[in-house]
Image (cartoon, rainbow, N blue to C red; front, side, top):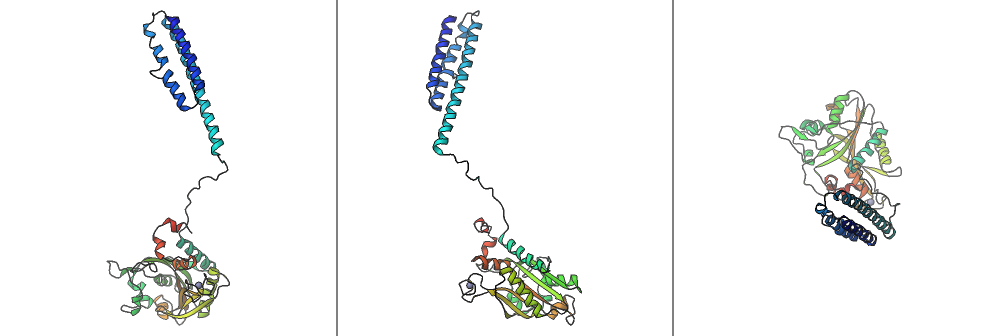
Length: 345
Ligand SMILES: [Zn+2]
């Protein structure tokens, strides 16, 4: 009985080794495993006959059976490893693995185009000795309008549609100019050279040309003997640093309630170099900022005696400058959080 079973075991071992050697792929190998080594396979069938043996014969048969089983499992593992290695080698040969391909790029954040423009503007003014002065977004009606020479019912208020809050006399600033009053009252009677960057808010229809929020950079210089010549020289210097040393600049007379005289500064079109294009509406010039000599009433409201002190102020929009520079045709892109727009800067 024992020898008969042992012969069957050895026969089985020979058959398995032959089939393993013939298995050419993972599917054939799996079939060999199921047929011989699986839970209902041939080996399990032979082992299942162990209880029918004479108890004295069982240990000897069990020993042989375990040795055969171990050898078969080793052979199976070796064949599996060999087939996998061959499959990898074949894939490398046919699919052409290129180890010199660049890796997948990691996503890297970047600064918002408005932040980039603000930092550039602040950098230039810092180089020219202007400090950054931070002022609040929520203002009183008095500082946003009254102290800037725009009293109640003044027609100039129609220039700004305002977000009023439920608290009387409290509003979201429509421009950065109220910061001038804060700065003057803080520094008076010292001379001042500051820029005031920040967000402004207007209750307007949102269109390609106007948003309800946008940045402004205000500038203010107050001291003794400051003249219109200083205003022009300083702003021309800024325009050259911002847009290039060769860029031509011109001033046009204008009107603001808080400056007298007032002007708007144009630079030669940065797209067409002054030849005339659709961005500059064929004029060759782009309006960049408004400016003027600080109105005596505003100086007085800031605590300075207009008979002794004088000053100039200016204001510009970083978004507007960015739009001109990159030919962006819709201001709504700036706050729409669309990565397709933001990733271009
Ligand atoms: Zn142009």
